[in-house]
Structures are given as C-alpha cells and as structure tokens.
Length: 250
Image (cartoon, helix red, strand yellow):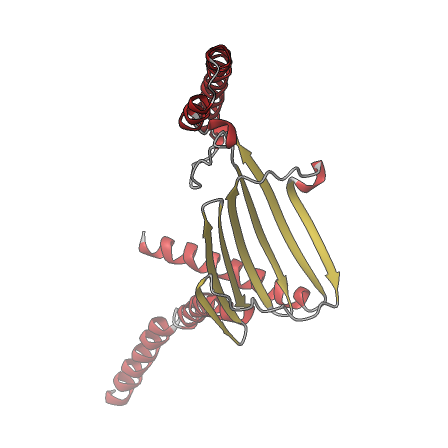
C-alpha cells in the first residue's frame, strides 16, 4: 500500500512539474489571462452592506408644530377651520404614502433587491510567473453588464511586458512584493459598499521542487535493476572456489 501511494505521488509530482515547465516556456512567448465575471442579485447573496432607506426625505418630516403656530396667528375662525381641515386631509395622504413607502422598502430589504454582488476570478501567466486573483464587491450601485462580459473570458498578449505590481494603498491589509513573489489583500468598506481583493503571484521556478520525487523514484528503480544479479554471481563464485579447493586437495 505504501509503495502504491508513493508511486501515485511521484506520478502527480511529475505531472505538476511538466505542466509548470510547459507554462514557463509559453509564458515568455504569450501572456494568457482567464477571467470569470459573475453578478448576483436578490436572494442569491449574503448581505454585507447595510440597508439604506430612501423614504426619509422632506415629506416624512412632521410639521404639526409649525402648522399650530401658523393657526394661532390667524384671527379669523373660518380661516382657521378651513386650514385645519386642509391640514388633516394632506396629513392623512402623507401618512398613507409613508406607510406604502415603508412596506415597499421592507420588501426590498427582505428580498435584498437593493444590493448587487459582483465576483471576478482571474488566472494567468506571463514571463515565468503564474498569478491568481479574486475580487468581490457588494454595493447599492447596480452594474448592468453586457452579455459577453458575464462568464469566462480569455485575454492574450504576445511578447508580454512584465506584470504591473499592485500599488500599496491604505486599504491593504497585506502587501508583499519581492522578485517574482507578490501577495496583496485589501478590504475597502463604506456604509454603501464593501470590496475585497486578493492577488497572488508566484514564480514558476518554484515548482522545480516537484521534480525531486520522480528523480528519487527513478534512482531507486535503477538501483534495484542493477542489484538483481548480485546474489547469483556471488553463489557462482563460491561454487567455483569450492571446486578449485577440492581439485587442489586431490
């Protein structure tokens, strides 16, 4: 069982090494980037942005105190009575409108119709390096993508230039860049949106370590192949030595 597991591990290591070597050669000739865009709306999301009510405007402000002061300043009883009836009429309309707005916004909050989530995942290689990226954002601003912008996309560039390093910013929680290595993770939060970005870049020569297990396996197989005839040869030498000793005694 151990031998079989070791053989499988060596085969997988050889596959990873061969893939990395192929990408290393290809990355110097052409940059390839595979990107997937996805947009989620409604109940297909997990809310991370607070709900922003929109009915809070000038029409929701209660003006009863101001109207009472105005009513006191008018000396005519008929005018005051007419103003009172008009105020009660418009106040009932205002309260009804506010109830409808609140019901509508409660529905929007419950169904998460007020937010949109966008996820972009990238994978590519260029000039001896391989990179992975993931971008997540959720906001109240809706993005209406074209049909070809949703799903997988493939971008290519012949004789590519070096990768552009991710610049440092106050939103970076992790930012490391040295040689062919790069790691950047940033979080940007606001009451209206949240955005998280992850970027990882590795040099392909790092995968040379996967060439070690196949070499060890090949070396062991070669050593076993050369050691198979040794016991037989030793037995033949012992038999010949015994025969010469008997002949010498005779």
